Image 1 (cartoon, helix red, strand yellow):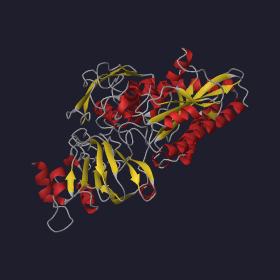
Image 2 (cartoon, helix red, strand yellow):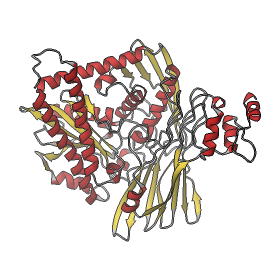
Image 3 (spheres, rainbow, N blue to C red):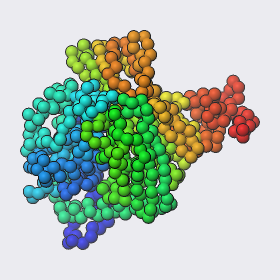
Image 4 (tube, one colour):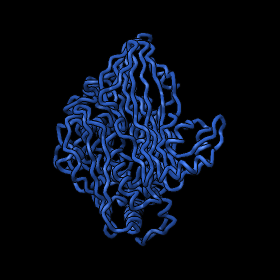
Length: 585
């Protein structure tokens, strides 16, 4: 063990400890996914793990393969557990205890994101907390999968858990477990996810103790403080380079699922010195449906957006210190009980991030992209498989196009803005559920036009093979496509079409509907959004436009309209004279 004698850490030891703490979280992430039963965790990686302060729950480190949107919410939920223990609202911890909580109003997201928190002891005292979040495929409520598009109260969305000890001294509490299982669908399958979630924390505890034993508790505490200080310093340095001023933007949610009118996110970002202040005054009031966002999710959405802009800043609570978010009281971005919130983490959070991008691209055009697809594509399907004699709940998430930027085109079929979750492999879904993917491909033509075009979304179609089922959708960008930037055009909107009884059905709210009855032979077709374009489309290199046509991304008619590039009749070649004339006009 290095003998530092109270002196400041040397650079090498600090770097080693930074990497070691990160590795603890990464190994927790891997353990969680590899041991989980549900495809949404095991294959899609809809989960996250981190290390949090014993004093106030502030973030110390988070896994690089975890969802960024959980950065802020796990910090707040861990803090809430600590505060509730301190004032006697939940039982005091003992070694081996693991708390479970999913209450959105206690620093959470939607009910399906279930958080575990475990204290790590050293010499009889809590050294830190390990926390993780996993998306459970069902948490009860009015529809399979929990994505109730027309809920008007949080109770309709599922089982809400305050912090309670699910594991006591390392043993699963059978009574708490029985209560949970009595309130969710396909309950017998949840034990695999619960055991995986707990195992990830135990692995983290073991690995963290190894680091502490090797370097000493005081040295690691000193390193944590120094890493937080440096993260804040680095974020402040990045902010200081931004011109002073106020940068304004707006983003829109299609509807709240109940009232078929758009919701507005109005944002003013004020840069002064080395801080940024985010003010959402003027945003829509709390809504009737499930597109409200709790404060923890709103804050985390701002943090993850800035993480996209400044990815070089090490992730810890220090990185958030120069980011001041005014509490958006009286808006749908500061939901209070009993507002429904099932769309907050997966959809509203991405509209908040989009508003941040649209504001900051004005200040940092070389660093910020046009808007990405910005929807998790939440598609929940629940029913009975008669061939296997059991019920099931399938949860499909999907990617979309990323926005173009100053240097290149947007990424095609990237993950959602809020995370690293990927669509589960088609083969896994077809093995686990009675469905057939009839089509799964890039969505041609969906990228927004620009000097650097947006990436393309995904097009897929799922057929029900056996039994009866019920489908629910909580998506977004069905009314407005992802925003282009600096003259770029918007990406294509999200589309949903249900084919049943030989007829086509388009949800009245375009991207949201619940409890659609389906039977064998019925199909669901989804087209996810493309990313926004960056810069004037008529400044795009015609040779790049020709390449896009050759690859089937756009038709010759589309590039003439979108980019002003005319192709020679009957051949794959640019008509330079006609192109120059069209672009000049």
